[in-house]
Length: 179
Image (cartoon, rainbow, N blue to C red):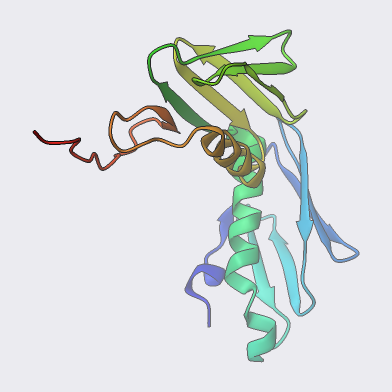
């Protein structure tokens, strides 16, 4: 039995959620999201307690394998369409900077001979403040994959700490050459 799957998810008044044709659809203040509902699981909306639960149709292990994962996905969908997810990326290094051009193009100056141009996805919002870049989205999965893409452009190196990282991320620093 799944400990995570057993927990009920509180449902805000502004969220509409339903399950149809093997998919879960959620609509809220900031947009719409959907995810797959595996066979053997069902979505139960309890209007009197204003909660949502993901329940297995029977107690076979094959049906309960995805129970906790689907419950976490539904909870993330509800949180995303009511509050949005946000992550702050820090760009460190001499001459390293970030610029948003026209709201659709991200220019990153990361020590290369040219600026790296990235097209901003439609469901991602960016805000540049100095050398910090705030990434916001209603989908936690898309937010994480975009942030990891930015880190792969220039990972933090351990000697001077230059590169792209999450704000507050600890980087293990190495000692340089000794005399």
